[in-house]
Image (cartoon, helix red, strand yellow):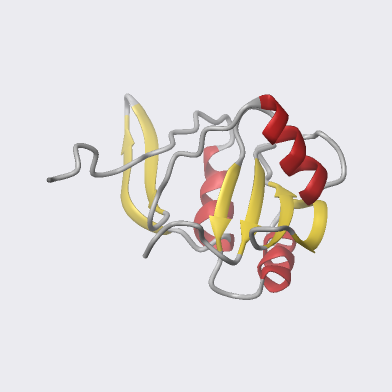
Length: 134
């Protein structure tokens, strides 16, 4: 049976588009899929590889924050990026590129993880091991 949904795209509306393009494309390493500059507005689509939608309740969100950060800090949306390099290396790269550390690398029951905050305030969990079937 063919899957009904072919792609998940998360769309962020931001005030500082150029700064965030630089952060997500040049620092995080997402590749440009499409970019446009029009009188009606500007935008970019960055390829983030495989996507999934994780739905959790507030109790589980608090547990994740406790494990990854030590206290409840994330909002209703948090990005999680599986990285190909060691989590500590990826964390330092993002901090050098303008992110701020929320919590240093640690070992969670599901993966090595760290948490940073992007220049737009979005919290990002970096992780090494996916729970998705390849």
